[in-house]
Amino acid sequence: MSSAHVLQALCLLMVFSTVSAQHGYMHDTGEEWENNWRKGFNFQCPHGEVLVAIRSYFSEKEGSDRLWNFECQRTPYDWGEPNECWWDDINRAGLEWSSVCTNNGLVAGVQSKYFEAVLDREWQFYCCRYARRCPYSCWKTSDVPEYYKEEGEMVIPSYGYFIRGAQTTFSGVLRDRQWKYILCRMTDFDCQFENF
Image 1 (tube, rainbow, N blue to C red):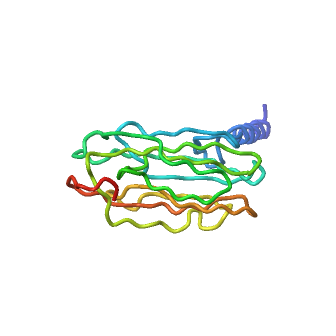
Image 2: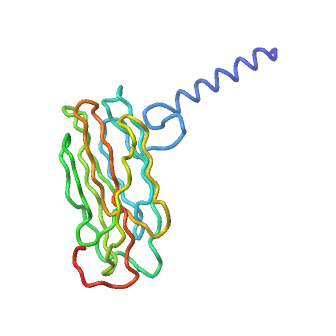
Image 3: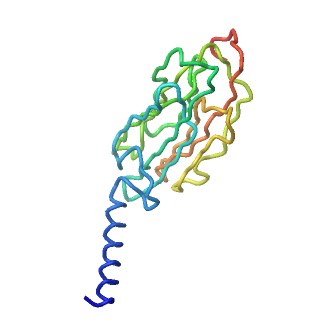
C-alpha cells in the first residue's frame, strides 16, 4: 500500500469520525449535551451541589431549539446538607418568565420540555435550601446569549455567588430566548427571613 493510499484512508477516517461525533448529541466542540434536539430533559446536580455554569447551542434547522449543558459545584462545607429540595414554578412555552427559588433556595437543577407547535421550551428550576441562609448582594447578568440565535454561556464569576433564578424573554419572530440569571451571595449565618 502506497503512502498516498494511507494518507487518503486517514483523511476518510477523520471525516467519518467527525461526522459521527456531530450526530444530534454532540456539537463540533466535542462537548456532551444534556438533551437531544426537540426532546425534554431533567438535570439535577448531585446532592449537596448547585449549578455554577450553563451553556447552550442554538440550531434553527433543529426546530429553533438549543442543546444544553450544565456544571455543578459543592456548596461551602459549613453549610452542611440541604434542608429540603423541590421543583419550583414552571413557565409556559412561548411566554416571558421570571423565577427565583422560593424559601431562599438555590438552583440545583433544571427540567425542560420542548413544544413543537410553539418552537419553544417549558422550564422549571429544581431548588435547594440550606439551613436558614439568606441571599444578599443579588444582581442580574447581562443577556445570555448576548444576541438571539448565538451560543450562550454563563459561568459564576467567582466562588461565593450562587444562581437563585432567572428572567427570560422569548422572541416570537426569532423563536429563541435570552436569559438574565439572578446571582446572589448567601449569608454565613442563619437569618430569620423565610423568603428574602
